[in-house]
Image 1 (spheres, rainbow, N blue to C red):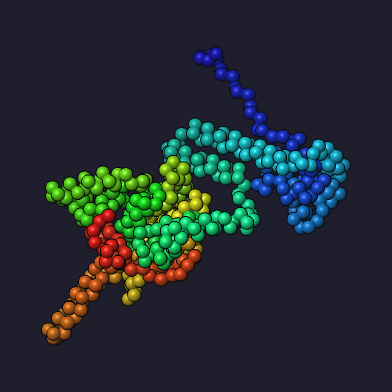
Image 2: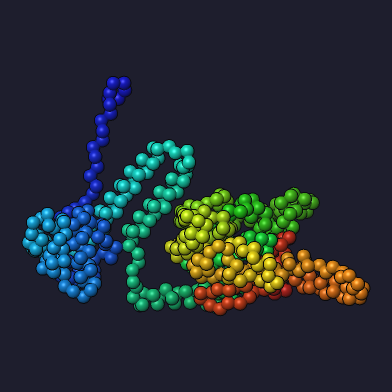
Length: 481
């Protein structure tokens, strides 16, 4: 009964699931036959034992066996002579011998080990569930409920990873069929590509496509067109290869749509954005909208996302939509743990690489480059221009830079020098115009790191007014999709 004057009965305390008998049976079996260490659950850890003393016994057995020594009641009693748990029992040697004597079946050791791990994970889930309830009940104005949900979803996923305990080692005979399938798929694509094609032939030939589990970093200074290149690659992948997820921390989803529409229709991005369209152009945009709406593009344009949120939402994209590529624009806008920005970026880049491996898909992360290159005569980016963190270079499988020489040439219009003859100045001006014409629609992707192949440069046709990038082959330089 509830109401004034009555108190609701406290629910009975839940006893964390455990089985001391199972733990004893497992330890006794291991002490009887050390070879069982090779076939028990490899995820088993001393912390999985509900009784801490049993966990220390297990660790000692594992350490002795790993060092090539025999683990039996005599050797363990010597090593654990001062263990408080065993000392409390009075006679460590007799207790350990009793463990061996009580073993019902050596064949059940693998099953015992799996049960110990399972019960430990259940206890962890109970702790997590209690923490969820406590923190959800404590209203903190600095913490949003959505932040708690993302945090706990990430921690719950970490628990599910513990269930698998990692894949462990694989025999080479298991690896070979997967390797042959990968090679066969590359052959079916015409050879040379492992993973997804960017749609830019020279770039694909250089990097071999965007391979599963790889982290690709594309760096550039502002106004080089890296977001437009990302949109072009994402649209190409979504059209024919796989659904794509985009985390856009800089542009709103509508802006991405406008860029892709400009590329598809050949109508300048600014005209699409500002609505400066005549009747025919508007008809083309409406037609493109109907076609583009079918693209399996999934855009999350939430600003200021934390890396943990990106990992949780990325997993959700893969699970719900079968996403085969994730693009992030851009890395320096992602939040992460760490006492300073350098520590943050170190954690973020490592986490993105882990995410690519975990999901088995390529991740394309854009990043800003240091302003220092603007002061150099040679404006082509170098690895040292990666802002704030060498860990980006370390964690990435491929590091490439987008460079448009036209951006700098346009700003370097010749000025007449004092006393300079007309012919001389006219000649310099003509050279500048010729250089402008040659560079206007050219961009270079400079691959400075390629863990799986060679480095070099891929030249592209670009028209930033249309957010368009193409291979330099004449047939691909004109027209939309």
